[in-house]
Length: 103
Image (cartoon, rainbow, N blue to C red; front, side, top):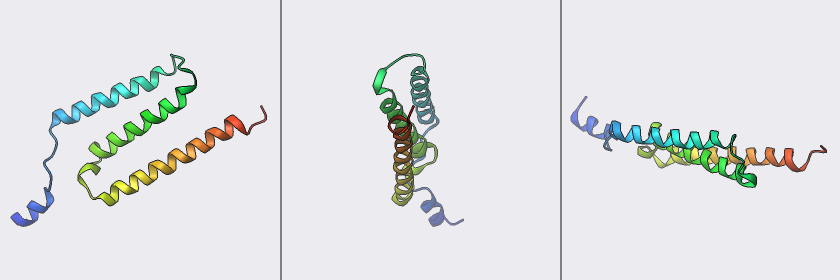
């Protein structure tokens, strides 16, 4: 491999192991908060709080562990589009169970 080809493969500085550990700890804390919602009644903000935590975790996993942060913007747009579509479908299904059922 030529040095020019090697230079194009490393357009960014790779994050350190410590950064990955920090992100993993953040994801663990968010997951613990999600699990704690089962034991603590937070009322009508339950679903919005879970949705926000879901989006934050998706962002961090996609950006750091899937290296989207360093890839083309096109890939980021694909993932964001998928996230928006999945969230919209999930919200529609939730409203079906909440508002359009007879029981």
